Length: 254
Image (tube, rainbow, N blue to C red; front, side):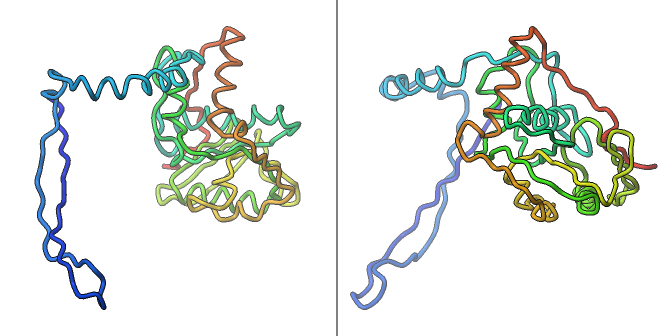
């Protein structure tokens, strides 16, 4: 039986004089209440009646089918099927904005659930990408891009798109980086697709803040979860099942 506990803290508050703050914590105690399946056996009718109208509204939003997955896609470092897929979706989305990204990046920390095998609902997308992060595009020169790859290596790996090949050491240092089979050219300009949270230098990738020629759409429709949903719907319309796998985008040198 799966068991959960909720801890409730209660404080005894004393009233002081008018020239001091009116309350002060004098003591703290706690009580542990076990929450398990016993409560499912006798549901509260009033509570269910209160929740049902909202549940119907939520289900109508979360339950629509947006695609189908060939297998469960999980996320883990340094490279995983799901992080690969989401980075590729960032590149795919460029067409909507008349962008032609050279690569996409999706942070591992922003992926909060695996993608289940079989039917995919919009609720699954929200579970996977729950934050209000929006897609954006910017330019880095080759030197800056190599620095980003060093930062990605130091984090243990992030989602990077097809064509990127990083080799790192067990100590999380970058050994080499290639894009579409070619070494990174320090003098070349590279267009990057990612989410605004990453573009702001978060998740220990500060060099992203040096990006130029930023395109950062602000409308809700540019939220990453809507971009992901639209990709799944596009694949569904084409009769394609969602799948992804590890490709050696990030390998650890032994």
